[in-house]
Length: 195
Image 1 (tube, rainbow, N blue to C red):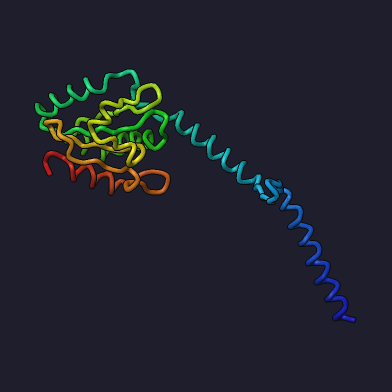
Image 2: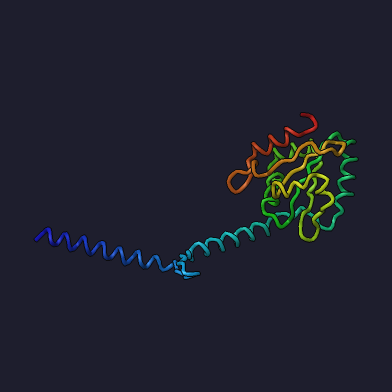
């Protein structure tokens, strides 16, 4: 008798948990497409939407250092003159205000005293705009179109004479949802005029 009660209890437990799993699967729907059944996870869509909203909120709060209306070629020419006088190199941070990773990098450098100090002592820093409004195609072509190779942000280091001495992919500087202080500092120090 005890064995039968245990069997009934075990069956009931499995049955009830099966119902629970069936209820959880309500977040998935099956769609037929070209004779194939495709399972769509509605929770994934909700998560993606929440991430998109969080990114938009973060982007709205970050400073927007890129100026799509500026004549980049003329500005870089001015920076080269200043770089010679100040014995500094130039960093072109290519990207745009549309790019959350570009904005994150700018904010990271500006709010990390150790990094800001290295940049201010060794570089003239310019945010080279790339956007639908102004792709700065002539300027980007001069520096081998680094955004096409690496995405954004991408960094072009010029010496004080305006000669391109390095292109830096930003992906290797990332850490989690931001940037590694140690890697970014090493990049800045490696390409400084005093190195």
